Amino acid sequence: MLSPSMLADLEARLAANPKPTASKVEDGRRMADLREQVANLTDALAAGALRSPSALADRLVQAEAELAWLTTEGAGRRGARAAGLR
Image 1 (spheres, rainbow, N blue to C red):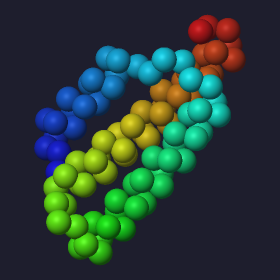
Image 2 (tube, one colour):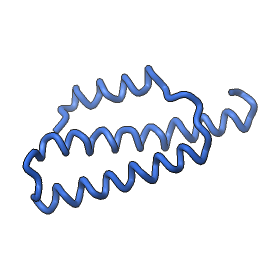
Image 3 (cartoon, helix red, strand yellow):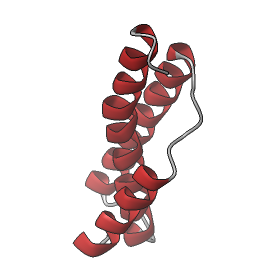
Image 4 (cartoon, helix red, strand yellow):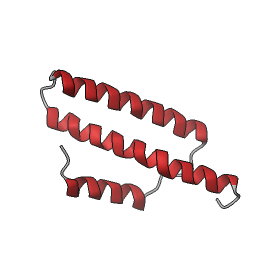
């Protein structure tokens, strides 16, 4: 699993390197894909069917972080675009 400092580093890198402007549809598709990944990884971790749980736990944290970023930043980008600011 990622340590709190590793998670903070990942979040800082995501914030420092924002995605290029993506359409609402692209964001929605990516968010759906990430939600599915999170569900699958969570199910696999819960079932204990993993040989390398730490690697998959790290991937789960990354998927959750990207989903959170898309949820907050993506909404902000769309709102700014609608207001003519971007």
